[in-house]
Image 1 (cartoon, rainbow, N blue to C red):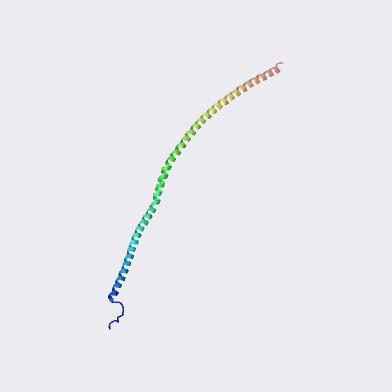
Image 2: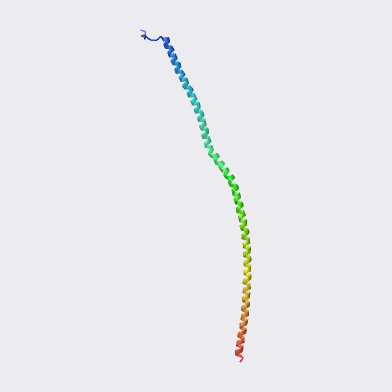
Length: 148
């Protein structure tokens, strides 16, 4: 027994509709595949760009540290040398002033020592003269008291 035939369009007509539907679906699938390939290519490019940015971000702190160290050293060296020169100049000036003050203090000490020696000599001379004068006066007083 054969399959019952349904009344409807002719099989050749159904075949063309099926072919048209098949071509339409195939066209849409091809469009979707093309879009997927485009998105995949874009994703690959974006991934490469992200990887490049990540690599740069990993290297950037090291480069920044080296650049900062170099800049600080280049800046600090002249400042340090200038600072040393200023201190050396101030120390030389202070040293010459202190030498001058030391010489003046030594001269004042010599003058004071000479004055003290002179005062001691004067005190010895005055004391001796007073002793001699006192002895003479005592001898005269005794001599007048013993010789009536």
